[in-house]
Every structure is written in C-alpha cells, then in structure tokens.
Length: 327
Ligand SMILES: [Zn+2]
Ligand SMILES: [Zn+2]
Image 1 (cartoon, rainbow, N blue to C red):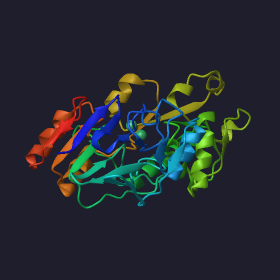
Image 2 (image 1 turned 180 degrees about the vertical axis):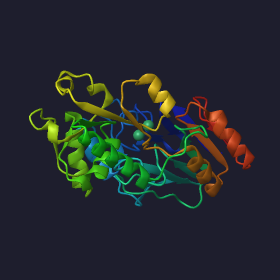
Image 3 (image 1 turned 120 degrees about the horizontal axis):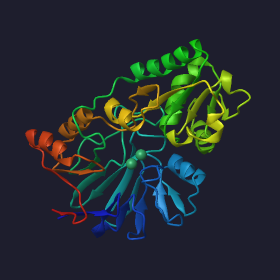
Image 4 (image 1 turned 90 degrees about the vertical axis):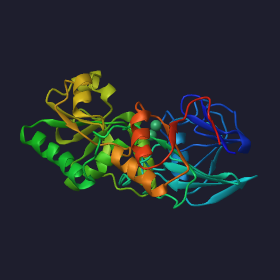
C-alpha cells in the first residue's frame, strides 16, 4: 500500500516516507521543490528543502532564505526506505520531475513540465517505468495542441520585423521567469538590444550563469527604448514607465486559447500561443508510454476530460484531492 496525499494548494505528501513535494509548511522531514515558480516555492521562506542547483539560484534571487540542499539531475539520494532522483522537466531552467522509488512501487511527480522541452531549460528526461504518475494537466482539453518551437520562434521574430516596419516598439508580455528568457533566446539572432522588467533582470543573470544565450539585455531605459525590444509582465503594461512610450505594439505570450486571452486582454495587438506546459495530446501520449498503475491528475480545471481519454487506453486515473489515495 502506498499513501499519496494532497497537501495545501499545490503540495503532495508521502506520509510513510516523510516526503513532501512542493509543500509549503514543515509537515514532512524531506521537502523537494520542483522549480522556482512562486506557486511551487514554499511561502515559508525559512524552510529546509532540496532543489536542483539552478532552482536554488533562482529561489535565492526571489528571496528564499531557508537552507537548500542542492541535488543535481540524475543523482539519487537515499532517505530511509526511499530513493529520490530529480530528472529534467523541460518547463523552465532548473525545473525537475521528482522520481521516488519505494518498496511499494515508484512514484513520478512531474511538477510543471513540458515535452518536447523548452529550449530555455535543461531538456526532458522520463524514466521508462513508473507505477504511480502524478501529473499536472494545466491544458487539459483537446483544443490545446502547440505549434513547433521553430514556428513559434519565427512568429516571435516576425512580430519584431512587423513592428519595426511601422516604427513601433515591440513589447512582449510574458511571465518574468521562464517564458521571458525563452522569448529572449528566440530574439537573440536578431541582434537587437533587449530591455527587461526589473523583476526579470536578476533571473536572466542566472540563465546566463547556467550557460544559456539570451542575448544582450538591460533594464528598461526610456532614452534607448525606441531601438530596443521590450519584455515585461502583463501587469507592468499600465505602469507609468510604459505609458511614456507612445508607439508600442504588444504581443501577449500565453498558452491559453486566443478566445480566452481575447476575453481578458482585448487591448493586445497579437497573441502568441507559447506555453511552458505540456499540451493535451502530449500528456495523453506520455501516459500511454509510461502505462502506470494509476495516474493522479493535479493542477487542472478539467480532470474528467483527461480521465476519459486515459480510460479509453485502459489507464486508471483520478484527481488527487485532499483525502488522498491509499493503494
Ligand atoms: Zn511552473
Ligand atoms: Zn505551477
């Protein structure tokens, strides 16, 4: 019997092994953090946790004060009855899937992941055999199918060329961690200076430290902005600084459908479907390949749609709720 419980909004607890995955409190002795996005990092900033070296560096930039034991990818740590290994999750720099081998079977917790991997990450690796697969399913409807990275990178560069033709300043609206740096990688060959939001600047430095080429960039500077490309979070668009640039053209980078983003952001000029999560079909394919005893679906608005497709493949699944799963 293996016990897997949901803990708090995002976390997972394996109480028999004293393991916590992306949990916020001190309810487990050993806490593993999948990646540095705010919804996965403990709100208690003084906790002792395990993370990959890149995740540790990104967490520090974002103000995490607790002790971080660095566990590089593919290295296994033994903790009593369990062995724990991080594998690259392809979501953002440092993002890891957590693989736990126990006498009751193996568990793979994806955290957030993307396969094929984001070019601004360490790639993607998945073990051959998994008994219990805990997967996020952010884009859990069959309307989500991503374009290839090549096509998306072309769209990013085309948007800049179009903007420059009309003497407009291209502005990409993205999350500051992950997608911003991916957009910067796509823009690098254009050799046009990039200007990023303050919150992204320190994170960009970490990407460089870990060997990614994200081009030449600075913080936002109104004196030179006309010859630059701007990358900011959506929330910064209405800031006093941005309002001083009269001739902007905006591209909103998000996996959410055109329709949904148009509903919320009718003011953007272009929508680019760039996501740092797996799409619906990639998710189903991966489950098929792993063929686990049970799939737990988390982080999703539509678990029943995923379950329906999995049951057609003969794979048992359920959303992971706070009552947990005892098998
Ligand atoms: Zn994430
Ligand atoms: Zn997340």
